[in-house]
Image (cartoon, rainbow, N blue to C red; front, side):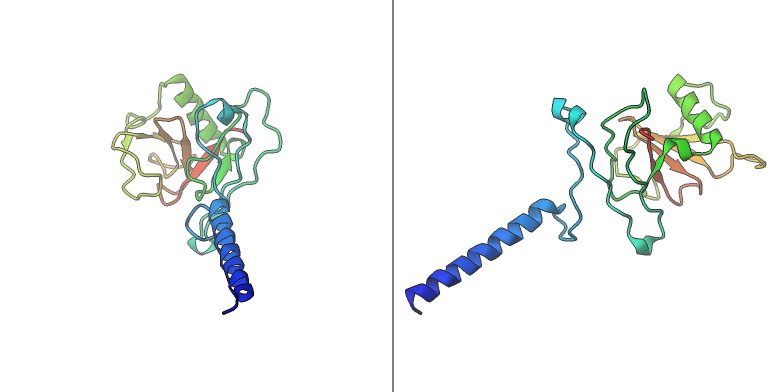
Length: 180
């Protein structure tokens, strides 16, 4: 091999290594090419940086697609919202049924709740929410008009303030986006 051929070989290998490293940096490290989520730092930069768009759901899962990020948060709304699990679909707070908004209002006030089981620990047995320690999640009933019992609708909250909506009794969840 001549020195000219050796130089071209070294340059080709170097180019491949750089391209692979760049691909890894812009992906989440799983190799599927989806963008990384925004950092979840609690420092000053986190409050000023714009959140990244959540990853779309796997089309084979049948889960709803994430909603488009709000272009401008409503006055008084929390800013800097970052989904806890970018792979999970999210739902705008304003698109939830009125009864869910009532439940979220009761949660914000600390009660009183219409059902004695509201506020109990949600065990996440279905593992559809991010894994956390036991006692991290709590569930609250969303009144279902016409239902003789508690119905299937719930809001589940996490100790870090995240909120999830399920309309099918834990069959699927969407993270509630308070920006919209």
